[in-house]
Image 1: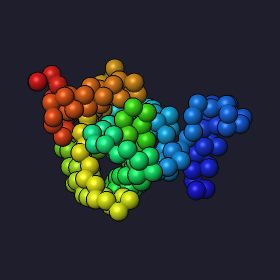
Image 2: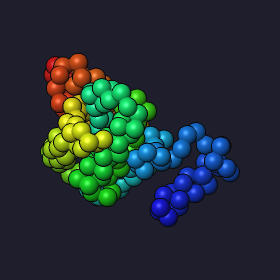
Image 3: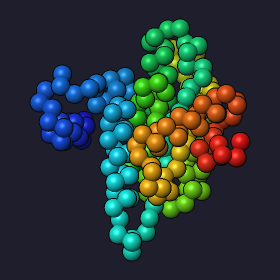
Image 4: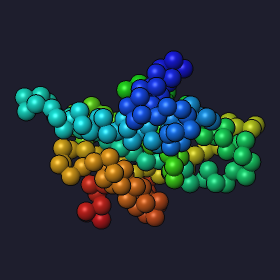
Amino acid sequence: MIKKQKETADLNHRYGYTKPDDYPGEMYDKDTGLPSFNLFEDRLKMALLNEQVKDQRMRKLKIAVAGIYIENLSDLADETLHREVRRQTAALLTEVLPANYTVACGINYPFWVMMPYLSTAVDAEVWVNKIQMALGRKILAGGQEFRLKCRIGVSLFEHDAEDTVTTMVGKAIAALHKAVSGRREVVYFAELANL
């Protein structure tokens, strides 16, 4: 809790916000405790800047962004059950991923994940597979078993000068749309050129 308060205070100071009503939206989701999409974008921006300003002698690392859409979340009519499934899904994601990865609540898509410090594209695939395995577990909510039907869209930062927060998220959304429309569990943005 203290870490969250410090991060919020740092962001407030950085952007000149003086009181909670000044900044757009909450910094953390009240149901899941995850960072908001605004905070996710800020963390992604910092990770991209860190990689872009590295000296030539330093090893360049990759950053993956994954958008996660849960198809059957809308099947839950009860709002309490809906919140419980989101809370448990958030817990599954944070349990399986390292602490330096950011799992956040999204605006149009329930969850976003930023995976920094990847050596190769294969590392991203390994972590996405772990996400799939975690989300493949049954969730017990409201006395009912619930199995998530997830679609994941992934974009990878490979030191393209054109990549920004907006393009990284946009590429993940494009891949996510292809995953949903093509009934595939995971689509990487790099694959879209080949489809």
